[in-house]
Each structure stands twice: as structure tokens, then as C-alpha cells.
Amino acid sequence: NEGYRKWFNESPHAIVGRHMRDVLGTTTWQAIERHVQTVLAGQSVRFSTAITYQSVGRRWIDVTYTPDLACDGTVRGFVALLHDMTERQEMEDSLRQSEQRFRALIDNVADYAIVLLDPDGHLCSLNAGAHQLLGYQSDEAIGHHYSLLYPRELLAQDQPHREPLREVDRIPV
Image 1 (spheres, helix red, strand yellow):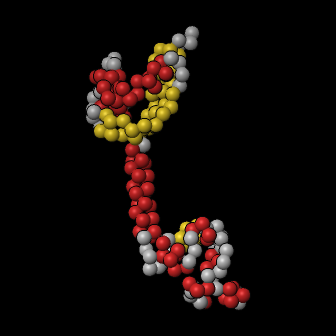
Image 2 (cartoon, helix red, strand yellow):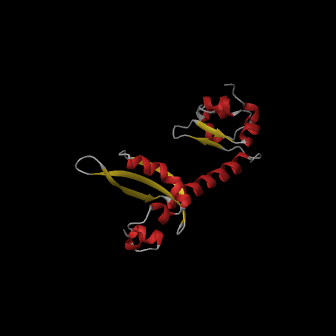
Image 3 (tube, helix red, strand yellow):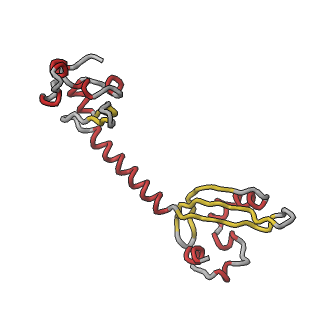
């Protein structure tokens, strides 16, 4: 089809009738050969992998091979459905790297307490500055409500947001 034509830069007529190994290249063939053998034995196959094609380079693909069965149940060949997941995989990798850089930045700030809260106000994470300035280790604070970080007298007045936190006012867990 048109997708294969673009990937292999050959017309369908130039591809039809050739062995997959010759079209894909030896390295790619070796990466998928066991899946091809399984589908030719009559079992459907689904897998996701990164494969380097001679013509288009490395691609992340989601593949489904379905046997093409004759009326008597013998395998005549198979149908291959490939979904190119390269763009999505690259975006996920980029996002993961960005999150790692952000996490490293936050974790290494020592002069400021940075805490992450869930929507209900429970502590999800504390950076190094929070450990140092507030006196709590992660295992002591995570899961507790953020009010844990405020002095008791402010909590009693129901006004913790009006005064800054003080290290000396640490409330035992």
C-alpha cells in the first residue's frame, strides 16, 4: 500500500513476490522472524518494538500479524497491520526527560521549601529545602495534610495561611 511505498521507496510491484528479508534487510528480518514464524503457524501475533529500516531509519512500531486462512484452515499467508508510533514515542521520551530535569532542579533547591500537594491538600513530595527548613523527612510528612507544616497556635485560630512557617514550630507526627 501507500504506507509501505513511502517507507521502502519502491512501488508495490517492485515489492510483491520478494522475500520479506530482501525488502526489510537482514537486521530487521532477524528482529521479526520469530513473529512471522508464529503467524505462519496459524496464530495471531501482536508486538511493539523499535526496528531500524534501511530506508527510513529507526521506527517505533506497533504490529499485528493475522493469519490469512484458506477455507480448509491452512495458512495462505498473513495480513500485517503496522502502526508507526515513532512520533508518540519521541514525545513521551522528551516529556520523561523534561520531567527528570525538572525533578532534579526542584530536588536540589536547598534555600526554599518546595512541597507538592494532591488536590485534597495532602503532601506528595518534599524537596531537600523542605527537609532542611521544615525539619521533616519525606517518610514523616508524605500523605499528611499540609496543615502539618503550620504552627499549632495558627491552626487553633484556623488561620495558618496568614503567617509564614517557622522551623521552630515543627509539629510532631
